[in-house]
Length: 155
Length: 189
Image (cartoon, rainbow over all chains, first blue to last red; front, top):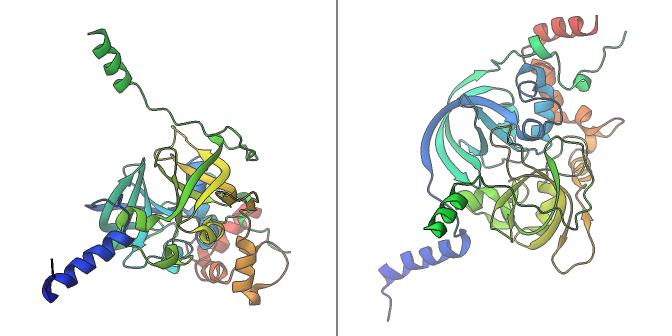
């Protein structure tokens, strides 16, 4: 079969896509969700304490360290689910990127696409509808977590 | 009929996490839900794997990398490398982008924390066929090369320019410098 010029181009594009995109990539589902940008290692591993202590203002410095260190960030939704953040407003630097770092501990309302795979939720944030800032003032209960996050002031 | 009942019982039974501890020499971090796990996997760009958006070289270090486990096709998320100071695993896995590897480390499966499944701390990695393990502890060297101006004493996270810029602007609690000073005073009184 001889391909016409008009047919060949889209077929080549499809072929290239088939070669580069994994077969397992799935359709996303549009979602709007409100929650806090957290560092997922401290949250999932319990290395610094229980889930309530490793979020919010108490854990803000550690959240900055983890985000800068390339620990994946997630959005802890009001539903208690964690949504692993893949992109925010087109920024795909989900390992130590500036956008993630700037939103550490912030509560945001996000509009985007949800993907599910092997028990984990993945989120492509297409738009940060509202950045509410840091709203979880859990330092009132936990102080600072971990304790060494703030060095003792020199006298 | 008995066979049908047996199949129905199997279908209704809870799914238990597979055991990958055989042969593992992973060191414990004394985490509540850790389990040693040695397995073969392909190193993939997670964003590519999940959404189909696939740049060259797994995102060249900008994207989180995953482990597509050979035994069951599960996408495992390595949140952490082997170092003790807040480092992720991308830097250590990037040299193995798109390669079949063996990894050894700690798998986190915590039923008490919503979503804590298929989370991994990678301690060492090697390409399938290689006898030499590579320790997953290269992040700090890469960071030091990226920020030569931050050279000094103490751990990297006390010297990181981006982190310190945030702390200088909004404080350790992220609530502004005035509030920060007030809270720190309370904390150390």
